[in-house]
Length: 347
Image 1 (cartoon, rainbow, N blue to C red):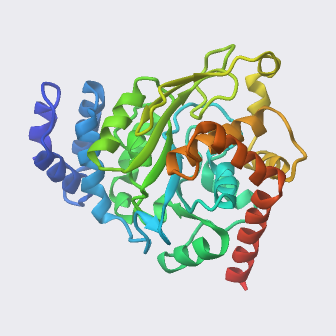
Image 2 (cartoon, one colour):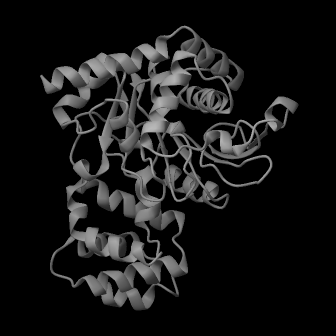
Image 3 (cartoon, rainbow, N blue to C red):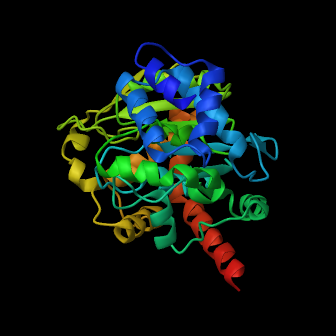
């Protein structure tokens, strides 16, 4: 079946049933790795459609470990802040630092993530550097949400079926060959959160993910492509000093912040050497010690997340509430609660 689809895929889109069969073949142990590689390369060369992306995510999700929560938590939509990755810039982990501000706002966060692949500090790396446990078992996810307001779903632990394709992905990745797996991350959260902020590194991915999330019936979401004001390099987040293009369930299409103070700040202000430095800077922002582009970027992303979630009725209200959560120390307190939670698990 996979060989037939490899021949057909350059000329047409795959049907939902064909994608289900392809998913079974990719995750199975009977097909040789070379056949899987040929299929994934052919698909990437033709380019995946939003319909295929959504169907592929829906085919893989039933294989994931159930985290014990789904959609909402205690009457509030669960929110995931997850990017596609692939930008290659070693920036402070904005979407990870975002978790603590959102939790302080009363937004239950269940973030899906992994270790760094195209950057030195992935979400799992920086959380560990902050002294937090990333290997939450399904029975502990609800406890984490109850005690800290947020939880992390470490992708390899919640998608064990992907072990069957790991060698293929690694081999292709070493050759610089991307596959559909490089696109699926933001769609594979096994908690299926009802609210999502998805950061992308290509502007053409805004409509791609918007359509895919619509097809997956996500109730509230925002896809954001932000870039630096000077270099125009994509940052994979809402930009606090440049253009951001949006797509989603809210009436926001673009935002451009080019004020004089912002122009004095450089993209390099967001660079970090490794996960330890990213963790140090996140904590410095939460404690009020660092005030600059990193802080502004965190706050603006928090504002968009709060608006997307419904916690704020406008972007301005979201920004005000996020600023208060930071200045009051409540966001830092969420980090400390997670540390205590992690220590008790080790005891």
